[in-house]
Image (cartoon, rainbow, N blue to C red):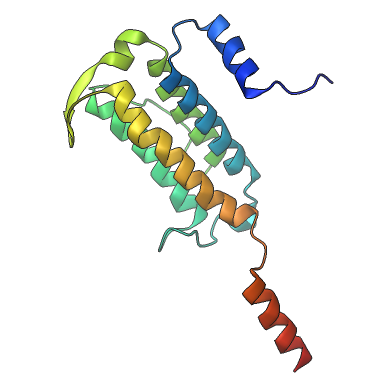
Length: 165
């Protein structure tokens, strides 16, 4: 099996295949892929677990991310189209909606389309970078907390104290 490519080599390889791919598009692609990998790692019994987002489960976090992607397409008069539901196929839903956003980011005309938003006139690409790419990173952390938690030093101490009592 060949060694994994360094991120800069992956970027160069993607740019060779997609010479119009912007830095924003590349960043979004990396974050979407990392988020989807975390979604894929969530076990069936973890979907109902509370996330660091108050009152949200792991499934709620993924549902928010999926819904937000479609909302941004709506800002520029586009639709998400059909995709799997988060309840039935969370990973499929994430890959479908982020793939749809990625498709528009790779088209220079669609990426540059502007809309009037909360922060004035913005290009689709800039709003994706400022919100959706950041959202993938932030909510990827939320899922990582569920996946890779280990007891804090305080929790380990409490457990030792309780077991020795």
